[in-house]
Each structure stands twice: as structure tokens, then as C-alpha cells.
Length: 275
Image (cartoon, rainbow, N blue to C red; front, side, top):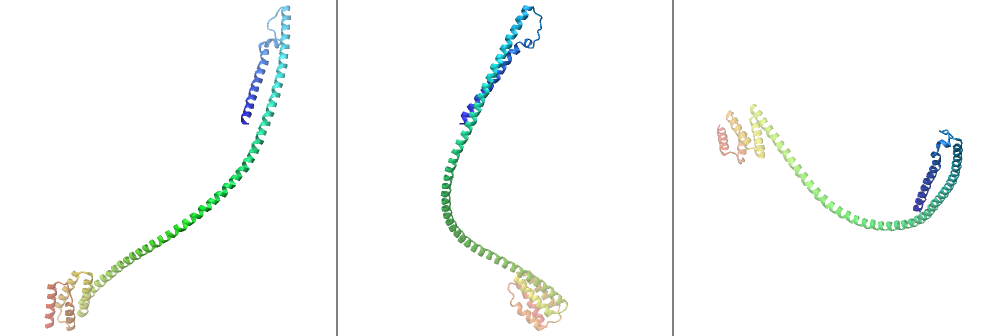
């Protein structure tokens, strides 16, 4: 149908070209003798020649009118042919559109039926896939839940263990810091009490400082405190028996102290006891 329409358009273009050629042919006789058609002779001729020229002009005019009449008839024929061709083209196009519309309606119904069947089949397949997918997903969720429970339990245990270890280390650091503070406090208190000649209370602070220093592993502090005790005993004019007994009992429980220093302090206590 489209090929026929193209063929008709090609014929119409050929007819238009023929009309243009006919119009050119009709105009050419006047162009051949423009001065004669206008009635303006350029040369004065004898009478006989003038009569011949007028006769020739009349013949040419008659021929021109005949050709114009012929061309008009040709143009009318061409215009009528064009009208017929246009009518045929419109009729063919309309028929083609109508036929295509009928085919379109038929194809549309067939396509709708095929689509309905395809949709039903697709929905059935989709429901089957969803059912299998739901079952697979349920199993996967159960497996993942069990795995996550195991991992969570292990993670929680590890986190609790790590947190307890961290708290224990923090408590140990806090306890050590408290012991350091107490040790510093006992040393300052002993120095203050020795300055106030309160030897019994000063000895008690020294003994507490020695215990704290031993717990902290600071043997140099133990040695320093023992030296200070011996120095203070040598400065004293007299010592209470209870203080000497306390020092003697405590010295018997000192392990890891320098034996020479311990013997020197013990000898000093013996001398004081004899006073």
C-alpha cells in the first residue's frame, strides 16, 4: 500500500514537469518574434513586402492562438488527471488506513488475549517462585539466627571477659594508687610525729609505711624507713618498753630485708633496752 502511494506521487511529479514543459513551449513562439507581436516594425518595407509581412503575422497569430487553445486543453486534461490521481491516492490511503485499522483491532484483540495468558502464567510462576523463595528465606533466617546467637554468645562472653579484665586492671591500678597515697601519707605523718617527739605514734606510722612499701615491692623505701627508725632511736633519751617490744616483734617478721641493716637496728634496740 505504501509502495502504491509512492508510485502515485511519482506520477504526479511527472505530470507537474510536463505542465511546466508545455507552458515553456507555449511561450516560445512569442519569444521568437517579439517585435512583430508587439506591432513595432523596425524597418520600412515596400508595399508588397509589407503585405507579405502582415500575412505572415496573421498566420503566426492564428498559430499562436491555436497552440494556446491546445495548451489550455492539455492543461485541463492534466488538471483533471491530477484530480483523479489525488482522489485515487486519497481513496487508497483511506482504504489502507481502514484495512490497517481492522488489522490493528484484530491484532490488538489477539495481543490482549496473549498478554492475559502470559500474565496468568507469569503470576503463577511468580507465586511459585515466591513460595520457594519464602521457604528458602525462612530456612536462611533460621540458620542465620542460630549463627548470630552463637556468635553473639561468644562475642558477649569475650566482651564480658575483656571488660572484667579491664575492670580488674583498673581496680589494681586504683588500689596501687591508694597504697602509694597511703605510703606517702604514713611517711609524712611519721616525719611530723618524730618532729613532735611523739615516738610511739611515729613508730606506728613507720611500721605501716614498711608494710605498704613491701606490698608495692619498694625495698628501697623499707630500707630508708628502717634507717630513719634507727636514727631516731639513737637521738632519743629514752624509749618506752612498749615501743621497743612493738619494734622487736615487727622486725622478727621482716623477710627480704638487708641482714646487715636488720642486725644493726636489732643491736640498737638491745642497747636502748639496757638503758
